[in-house]
Length: 194
Image (tube, one colour):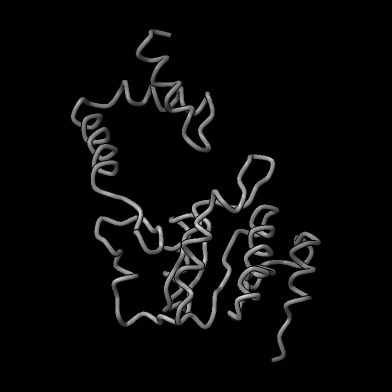
């Protein structure tokens, strides 16, 4: 491989979820596209770096301070939904069910990777608790997300804040036969009267 191509493959391989094979395919695709397309992609990347930043209040990605959610007076100021990453906000927003605020932790607890409470935006969350009545923990249902939710629940309960967790269970249209034991167990534990 030529030096520029090898360098591009190396840089692309550093992206999350992109391995060497995918990076090589992408690099060869960039060789085939026109210079204008390549320039547009490069400019889009630079624009993201130059024009976007984390909201100083909630850590969402924004081009204005505060972000559009934090700056919206019609949002429920007494509820904060806590997520791990900025891209976790949009799926929740699309449901139309949460009309409160958000707080992005910028990660999850992971002692194996050296990520403790000090590396997350937990102190920033605690400073926002003023009139907050409920904190909804919407961390991922994996080991790190569960550990983070448990840590936050203990911390927030000690401060008199109501803490709730997203319900987990079987997806709509799912089949019990193909549902794993953990998901099925959570579905049973989180059952509701009808």
